[in-house]
Image (cartoon, rainbow, N blue to C red; front, side, top):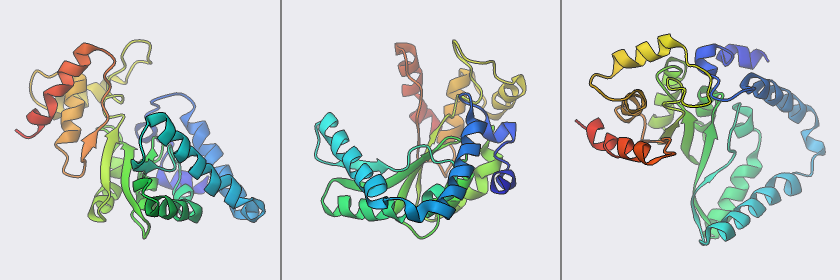
Length: 231
């Protein structure tokens, strides 16, 4: 828990709370890390880690109808640096799958603690891609880690870019101060989600964004943004 507090992951503007129970997830991850340190040697790591990843990849290849994956996201939804650094089995399996031609690059995703996870993938390991929650609200917490990661050659995909400032149907209301901040950051008559994506696409440390497109209007709104971001 001390590590969580040091990273300030419980701060509302870092956690943002894109979906409920995120603080609970962080607590569970911290407990899992402690248990791993004390009892990890009792786990059948070949079965519970290596084989689990291999089976997951094989099942994904079958469902997708392809013979390889460009990016193996493992783990998906990492909450702490320990989930990267304490599991060398991930790297061993990745190397096996890569040599077999079944995966090309290793990636990781993080909703709740992108700064801590970026610090981990910036160390000496085979990660090439990080898909992280990154937006105008939490950016000040991860800016340094983001720059360090990109300097190490890690490609960044930003997610939850608009979610921090745009509630949408059936979602909790967003803090009005966040909306004001976004409105003042990007000029023009763009819609609020468009401004969020433009902010990210203009950031030199971000290679691309995951955007929400649940209807045709979203598609047409988003298609114009890559070109606009280069202006």
